[in-house]
Length: 154
Image: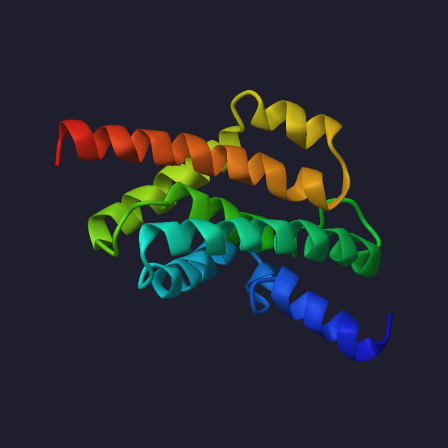
């Protein structure tokens, strides 16, 4: 892999270098996810879902390459997984700041706590798939809670 390709993978996998934040790189990376979400939110729900699926697949491949570049498993600098998980958390929601904030907080809680099966995936699945899949599960949990909030409260 040439230096240019490595640079592109590092830029994308670190969420435009947000993963280099000295504290809480996952949380800072998730903030970058809000920017991606706002762009995706302009599209219809089916297009949003398609873009999110494509993003998740790309995140898996990019994370796999990033592990090789950083020469460690699940590097903390890689935050594309947080971005992918946040996109899953916000699926079917329009750009409402209350929901964006609630989705951010819920996703980060589920990503940090890693309830089953996210904890199992984090422990047993390696490479790009393992890096991204536990965040997708956290995003699914956050989305379910947000759907319930929307249904029962809003």
